[in-house]
Image (cartoon, rainbow, N blue to C red; front, side):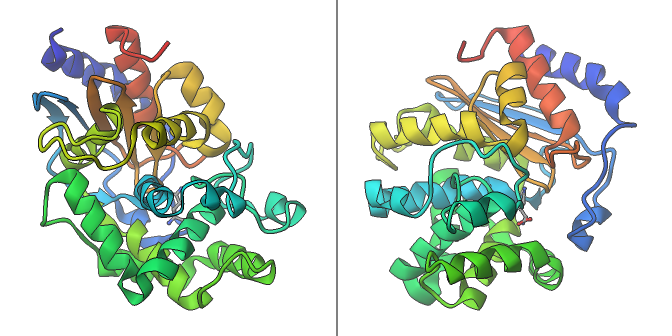
Length: 305
Ligand code: GLN
């Protein structure tokens, strides 16, 4: 398949959507992104790479970080993890408080904010004050890139404005579903969201999920086959919050979005993908990113269905 040409076609066809969508402003630093940015990267299991647009430009990974923290927490806790976070789609926005109160402080899944805050708390219990460094090291390992770091300005911007996340963590603390001090856990969570990566690095970091949990280059096992299946399943059913059904319907791949404008996707047994465009749809997912992935699976037939 001529992936370079397909990426070129996608880039041409998404141009008409640049007038749509909105930059997020609840984290002030994210509102400063360049609205016209677009990048898309593919990397196959044999290491062939295809890129278009500003694929070297770094942006904050935001909720894409939830894939890595869930992977790490699942590795340490196995089934025990599901006593504290569920594995069902929420049908609610990523930062919703309503369901959490009804369900006694147990978040529906690890890919909404409340669920990711619980997985971060689980990692804090294991790693203590090193939790953020361990998360960062894991991301560096799966991306095979030791230069990856977080952006302190984006971190501080969210720390000063992330009021709903403070509400979520305090509500869960009241149900004893947060074991560590709320200030420590929320800071680790905001820090992991402020990690900066480009589409090339993010696409590469998905390869272990496309390869039954194994790094295709070093052949080392990141996570076992069964857990890799579960992570992919949750990306498909919960990776886009209350638009997860729509994403599965349009794109047909496990995926995870972040309000920084990135979306990662996995083509099982074939490749990792990442697309970036910072304006979001009303569900908080990259509008053009979703469109580009839909065009990709339509043109290539590379969906899981
Ligand atoms: N840091 C963001 C938040 O907690 C992440 C949300 C997202 O990317 N959907 O609100």
